[in-house]
Amino acid sequence: MSFFANVELVPGDPILGLTEAYNADSRPTKVNLGVGIYYDESGRIPLLRAVKQIEQQLANEAKPRGYLPIDGLPAYTQATRELVFGKDSPLLAAGRVTTAQTVGGSGALRVGADVLKKLLPHATIALSNPSWENHRAVFSAAGFEVVDYTYFDPATHGVNFDGLLADLGKLEAGTVVLLHACCHNPTGADLTVSQWKQVAQLLKDRQLFPFIDMAYQGFDKGIEQDGAAVRIIAEAGIDSFIVANSYSKSFSLYGERVGALSMVAPTAADAKAVQSQVKRVIRTIYSSPSTHGAALVAGVLTNPELRAMWEQELTEMRERIHALRQGLVEKLAAAGAPQFGFINEQAGMFSYSGLSREQVERLRDEFGIYAVGTGRICVAALNQNNLEYVAKAVATVAK
Ligand code: PMP
Image 1 (tube, rainbow, N blue to C red):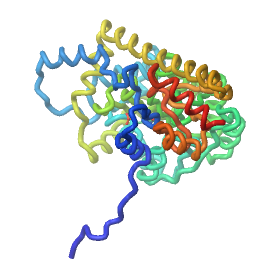
Image 2 (cartoon, protein in one colour):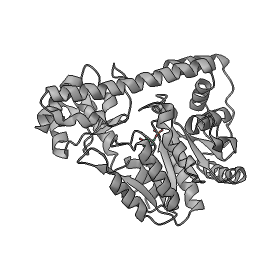
Image 3 (cartoon, rainbow, N blue to C red):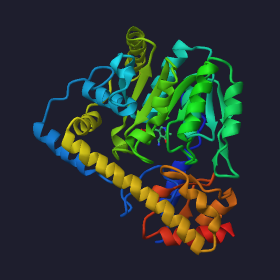
């Protein structure tokens, strides 16, 4: 008997497949806008100066590599908590937040999902329509029934806020609601501060459970402003919620898999119990996280000089994205496509460009420009060398 005969072949990830097609394309003018990575002006993944410095320092120290605690490096989890909730958050002072180091933001989502399945076994989860495509897969894999709530408005290329409120208002009490804190992936459409306040009140009134995913803190307006959603939910008096965060983008440490899962509970004693559940889940998946990436992030965040350097580099990345958005809009208008002004209103690395599947195919076939079939483009993969080419091509297919 052959146990592995006739195994079903699972289709590959469509976005990774796009990169394979891009790599195989021999046209020198090709551009890959399908990725979820910040590239610098030279088209490379940056190695931040602050990261390079701490890496050299750690290499010189050459410390032994024992196991970390199940929930990770304490210096890392503490610095993360302060970054995500704000150093002066009353939740931190009250000991109501516990944080575990996780294998990227993805690991935080999955560990969080597994813990929630245990604590709220009958809950469903509501995702924005659309959402990062892995959200559905992660929560389904953890045993959740997944439903959608209205989010994007193709007419305005922004948030359909009335639709969102109406859909959240219909959810059963106890439903988990996944919210993108900022730089919504894939649309780039974010809520304003006053909209967040309305959402927080609605979540509280309807007894919905917020699960905040923050993968891009610092990529739109700044560390504090981009974390506003977390503080607004806390200030609304919602006593239990989850935040998953990732440093993949903000530290340009994609392959180090640095993320964290923060659980907010009504009291410090509750938080301790919740963390014991988190630790049990981690213990049964990978036992404890790895040392290097967390040591880099903790080393930068806890050293005032390196932290200032990192904040400066994060500002440079953010400002470069803003300049690219503006440049794209201007060049599109100059090429006869003035209808793309909304790209300036969107936030973060991504834009739902409004291009149809057919237009995306034409971009690929005629120009060697690769975008996701939904029309999502990664603005952070543009640079001054390819901007004009992309703008002219998009204007051509959008005619
Ligand atoms: N959430 C969102 C919204 C994301 O876009 C991503 C990845 N790009 C993640 C979570 C996962 O982050 P990580 O790469 O750190 O696993």
